[in-house]
Length: 190
Ligand code: ADP
Image 1: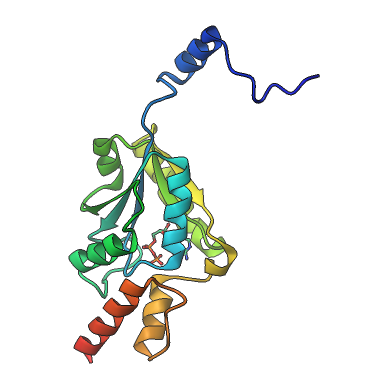
Image 2: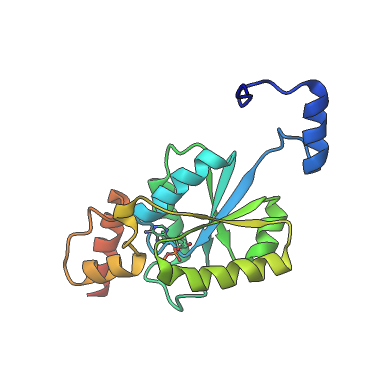
């Protein structure tokens, strides 16, 4: 049997696909990538680039309060400024403040999906619970998990801050704007 993967669908088939999905196939696909980004790491950036391949627009939503961490090193405006510099030139990305319920924010933006990064099994339990709870509240919004390049799977903002605090070099882990911001913040705190 001939492979039909590259065959153009007939107008009738196109119409059927459209009605099956309840929306035109050409509809804009928007996703939200929420997190604390305190500060952004190359792991976050890897997830951002992967999500940009899947969606037309990605809103990186910086949480004022985070479920995992009670306090951040950087203020929300500082975290946004670092993200903006790190994502400069990534056309599909918008940065926004997230204050309140993630699913309400996602719904108000018209998002189809919530993007989260999965590093290891240790992330899974928390992420799984969050995804199911969000689905319960907003069944039409899917949570999508993306895995970063292997070399970023051990990276977290928390560990980067710890290394920087102890005087270690973090250039391999975070973009230059975050390296600069970490040095400045830690010297202010010293
Ligand atoms: P962290 O958990 O490091 O403090 P965030 O709360 O900002 O980071 O995380 C936002 C999202 O990005 C979460 O889904 C988290 O699992 C994911 N993430 C964080 N670091 C990485 C990484 N190195 N690779 C892939 N995903 C990551």
